[in-house]
Image (cartoon, rainbow, N blue to C red; front, side):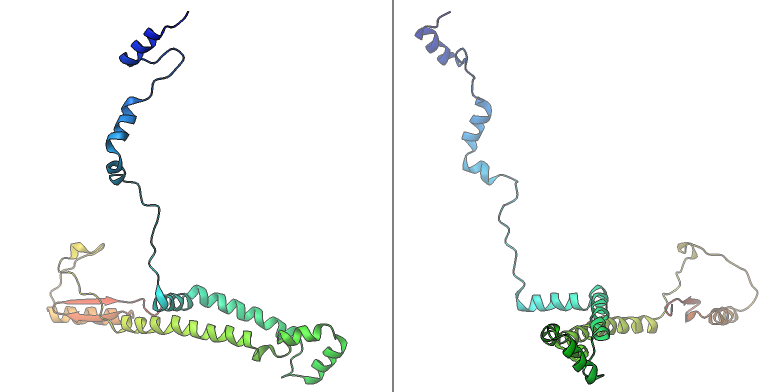
Amino acid sequence: MSTTDTDTAAGKEAGTPPEGGTAPDSGAAGEERELGAAGSQLSTAPAEEINVPSLGPLGWARWFWRQLTSMRVALLLLLLLSLATIPGSLVPQTSIDQLKVQDFQNRHPTLTPIYEKLQLFHVYSSVWFSAVYLLLFISLIGCIVPRTWQFIGQLRGRPPAAPRRLTRLPAYTTWRSEAEPEQVLLAAQKIMKRRRFRVHASGDAVAAEKGYLR
């Protein structure tokens, strides 16, 4: 079957593709042409370039101090310090026995220059060992001192006030007594102190708590 030029032209005018061909997606292509640059501005896709603000010297100093004063770093430095003491117990030290060091150097002429560069004959006064235990001391001070002041503040703080409604407590009970309110409050304070509670009386209620010395 043959196709004439007249049929091809009529097909183009009608918008139908010729035989053996495919018609373009007129809907999607038309929308893209209509939107153009405006459509790219209305896109909700995140921008590819992300500008991360620089910390600066002060920011890096704060970050380093937080990392150094964390308990994880303190434990890591303690582990490194324990590992650093191993050469000091295996290699003779000049501060302990100079004769053993001289004998070791005579018997190991090849290892002696390497050990001297690594400061293994005086481990406990070496630069790398001193750096480890200085960082450990700074880390422990940074970990303990702030937490100590916080702990002291909690010890000096008063127990929370008793609620006006007992129904707000997860567990409560009531009793009836013919004693005076002052006598009841005094008896409650004595019972709580006897059980090592921190007691605070305010108004017509007694609040108590314990557990900070665990």
